[in-house]
Length: 244
Ligand SMILES: Cc1cc2nc3c(=O)[nH]c(=O)nc-3n(C[C@H](O)[C@H](O)[C@H](O)COP(=O)(O)O)c2cc1C
Image (tube, rainbow, N blue to C red; front, side):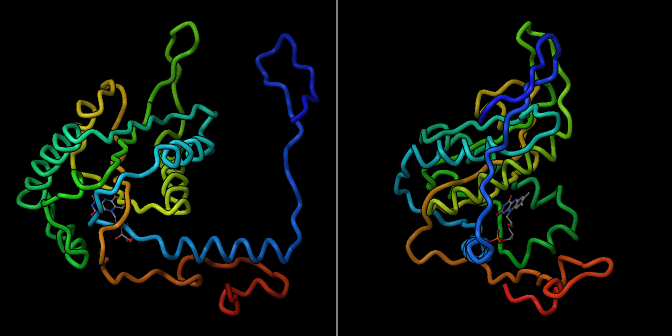
């Protein structure tokens, strides 16, 4: 990128010429179709192989997640990685404690009914079997170079977008994930050695599916169920006629 604007003496960042390439329409149609077809095969996996995964794939997927947009560009996320058997065992023990209380007492009947089709229980062996656990933390504050505290904005939304990009990047690289939210998750600060000012956002379980792994036969909403078209428009935009 090249620098275009002189902003000396102000806090405004210099502007760079955007690195953007127009692509032929047919290529855009094909790549968006292939991307959708790939993501359509992503499933939450709860039965992992112990096979190790390449560290650089995880590192690159995290760098991809770190390109996410964020409120006021605060990048209010932290990804704590572990492959350590003892750390994973501790996380499993703490998660199962919380989940037992959740399934036995804390969860409303409505919530339990919503989970029933998925067949999830308080037992979480995948937390030890999967080769990698990533604790994702949101940061309510950032720190300036002089150590002063800066408020972050739209923290929850920003971290959610980064997580979506991370899950997509790991899937695209050939790994399986489970978005896990043992409730409550405060024990993750201790497990991942993170300060109390950070809020555990979710625990991402990463690895390869076990041989013969099965997943619940969920459905996904159609385009017309998740999208609507407003106002007059041209041919090709009709959601019902769309053939992705
Ligand atoms: C924010 C969030 C929290 C979730 N928490 C859990 C969880 O704690 N345990 C679990 O087994 N699955 C969890 N899931 C996975 C969902 O059950 C799963 O995404 C959903 O059933 C759709 O299945 P799919 O991911 O295979 O498309 C969570 C998903 C999201 C997005």
